[in-house]
Structure formats: structure tokens, C-alpha cells
Length: 214
Length: 81
Image (cartoon, rainbow over the protein chains, first blue to last red):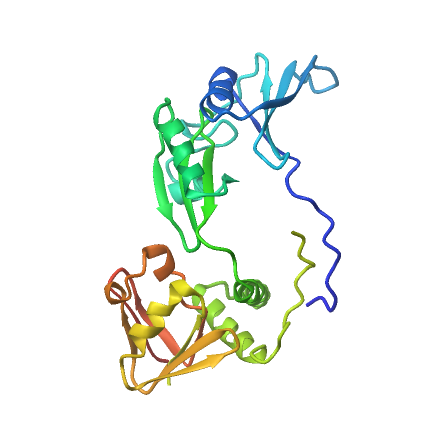
């Protein structure tokens, strides 16, 4: 366990990038349905030893100056093993859906009203809201974009409390401990956490968590 | 004596409230957690808590001297191990 917090120097998402085989659908979805501004693009001729195709790389603002970006490689058709999955990864029937759906981008909005607005925009489009759900402390809507990427838009139901930060630190330490012990089960996690809960019960600032930046 | 720990956040309070209706369940604060321990199995009816599924299935923070023998849409049951 680290003894002193490491300076937390990262400042959020610059951009998250994905390939697209459907640039038209992608532009309609992000620019026209969701209304995300186009903020940057690179149009480049392919070069280099690997026969890199010509490509266009384009960026949409997702708020806070963070961006989602796409690559379209002209003329490139990736080998795909099935229709399951998305434009980046395809899976056979043995891969369960929970695993395919685990990788996703979640975009934050400030209020229920703003979440409703995005649900409304999606429901008027070719990519309607597939699910709206209240999780533990957030409420989210989901759809798949034209590339098959799972997109979540989410709002906080309430602010995160200090005891939840404490709990997260204990959970992660417990996970590290059971992984090191070769016993990766929920049961083992809860048992190890119980030990850490008792050990740190009296601490005011028990586990080192990195400096929080707001 | 089966013992569970529940983080003290608003969503989890009905879990503690329902569990503590059983007189055998002892309730004590341990740091930011509530410790529930009992001489008998700890049984919590989900519908009585009114918890939505996401809250229900993440309400346990820790487990000592017990094992989860049921944790489904109906109930959570923890027995001595």
C-alpha cells in the first residue's frame, strides 16, 4: 500500500478514439442527433511500411472540452468473424453479451432535465434509447451508436459522499489482496473488506487516496 | 455469529432498518459502516426494503463469520459459516 498520496496530475479525457466503418451514420448520430459540435479533424494520406490506408480522423466535443474521435480508413474492410460486437471487435456466439456490453463510454449531464432531453433526441432518431435505469447513485440511458459502440449518458442522483470514497478505497485494497492471494471471488472480497473495515474503523483518513482534484 | 457490514448511505438505510426488526440482530456503527450481527441467520426481505435492484445487489460491504446462502430478488440470507 502506498504510504503517501501520489500527485494526481491527469486532467480528464482529452479524447477517446474509435474506428468507424460507417462515417455517415456516425456524423448523423453525433452531430445531428445528439448535437455534439465538430471540433477537429485530420485528413491524411496513408504512408509508411504497413500500407496504412488513407484516413480521416474527426472529433466531436462531449463537454468539458473532452472529445470523442473516430477514424475512418478509406477502402479498408476488416476481417470480421461474425455480426456480434462492434466496428472494433467482433465475437462468436460463445461470448456472452454482458462481456461485449462491458466496454462503453459514459457521458455526464448535469440534471434529469438534460438526461430527458438526450433521451428525447435519441427516441426521435434511428438510434432510440434502449434502456433507462437508475443504478446505485446514477441514472443512465443507453443506446448503441451506428458503429455498435455502447453509449451511456448519465446523471448523478446525488453527490458522492466521503464515506463512499472511503469504501471505494477499501474495496480496491481488498480486491488487490484477494487477487494476490489467488482467491478472486465476491465472497473472498467481502471477507477481506470486513477485515479492512474493522482495521480502519477509527481512522479519520484511513487509506491513502490520491489527491482529489475538483 | 454471522456479521455483515453495510455502508451508511441513504440508499442502504432501509436494508439496515428491515434487518434490525429482528430483535436478535445487533446494530452498531463501525466507522462509516453499520455492523449487523446476529445469533441467528440474518434474513432481509428485499421487497420490504423497497430497494431497487442496483442498490440491493451492492448493499453488502463486508462479511464476517458467515456466508451468503441466498441473495436474490426475494431476500438476502446470511448464515454462520
